Image 1: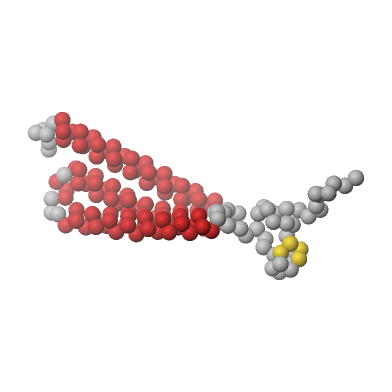
Image 2: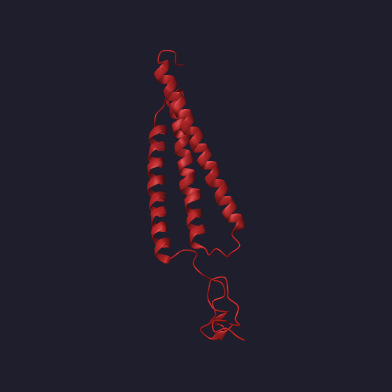
Length: 153
């Protein structure tokens, strides 16, 4: 009593048949576990968007930092220091996190990427929290300026 759709071959993680490649089962041309985690069109569009974000983010933040540092009274204002700190964090995101995101997207999921993925998540989490803290400090500083404009140090 055997069913029609039953196959004795084991299925691999990528949904292909049991190790049958171009040259038969387990042959030299077999594709053992290598597959793309996302469709190629999604990978290309997301990678190009992230590279565009990297180039524009890095160049604009670097331009702002150069303009801020060209001023001689940069240290006189808390607002300027916090703004510079925010731009430095944005440059760290552009230089460190975006390329790592592209690598995580392009590499297959079955590779041993646990350390890279954990480091990537740690970097993203750290920079997100630091950016939120900077925005909070800027908001408190702006509130202080509007409430007590004459009592500023």
